[in-house]
Structure formats: C-alpha cells, structure tokens
Image (cartoon, rainbow, N blue to C red; front, side, top):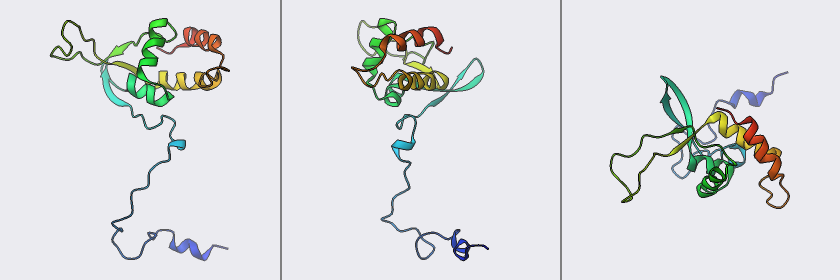
Length: 142
C-alpha cells in the first residue's frame, strides 16, 4: 500500500509559490565533500578537456598549505608537476622568472588522498611516512 504522504513529495516545504527571502540555499556539507571545497578547473591539454587542480586547490583538498606541498616536491616526496598554467605575460617579481602555476590531474589528487588515508599521514607522529613516500614514488599516476 502506498503511503498517502508521498502525494505531497513534489511540493516545496514552504507555503505559496515564492521562495522565502531569508532561506539560504542548501549547501553541501564539507564532510560529504571529498575535496574540502576545492574545485578543479577545465584545461585543454593535447586537444582534450581535462579537469586539473592548482597547487592551492590540491592543498585545500588534502588539508595542507601550498608551501607544504612545495616542500614535499622539493624533497622528492611528490613528483614535480607535469603541467603548469601559461606563464604570466608581465614579470610579477623583479629578477624572478615565473613558470606558471602547478597543475595536478583529478587522478593524481584522488591517488594522493587515498595514499594519505592509507598511510595515516595526517597523524604526524603516527603516520607511515616511509611507506607513503615509497608508495608515491612507485605508483604516482602520469
């Protein structure tokens, strides 16, 4: 037997036809968001549209600072970014050549999130850092 209240499922949860002014939009909870609010951007690489994260978005997704990821890259714990945004037209810092922002693919971000969870790297004193570094070095997606 059908539930008689199912008849009303298509109706909004407010009276009348106009949305209340003081009611905000339903926001997706951050706990449900795998990337902590970081959003990939579309770039065309070799004629294909690809979703890429900047280093700032990657840092937001894993809960670290971009400077931390640059240190990991400098120490060899993360491979150097394969792609970058186009370099700026004008020089931003005198006497320094800009290379463009580092870009990471959706596959690389997913891989890094899984590795962080697997090796418990968020727990600074309890994480398996050696296993994490070896796993990243051996299995990093291109």
